[in-house]
Image (tube, rainbow, N blue to C red; front, side, top):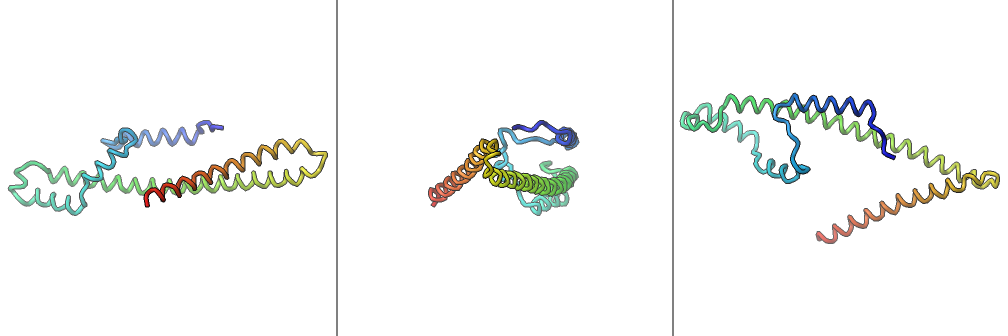
Length: 165
């Protein structure tokens, strides 16, 4: 069952879209982003290197004359990066909390589902409650299906590790 988009989802999507518009030059990486992100990472240099280049463009006349790096613009970009990194940190904190909340709620719901299943098994011993048997059969199938899927994932991981070795 696919849940419908809640009011919270719609509100957050609207806020995130507004934030994207507020960040000048904001862009999503094309094609899922992996290749582009690798390229951007390779082109990155340590912040201290950039600081040195800005200082060089500011204080060495022959470097300043090259007009490759405007120290004022570069300082503004550095401030922008700092601001965006703070937003990134705040967002990551929010995501950690969101992931924990999802896991906690799934665990709570799963625990209640298992309790219902266990109670149904106890009730199934009463011949007058045979309407429970189809429910128990279906639940048992679903539970075993999940365990089989986990085992398959574990086997694939082991095989990949063996192939890499």
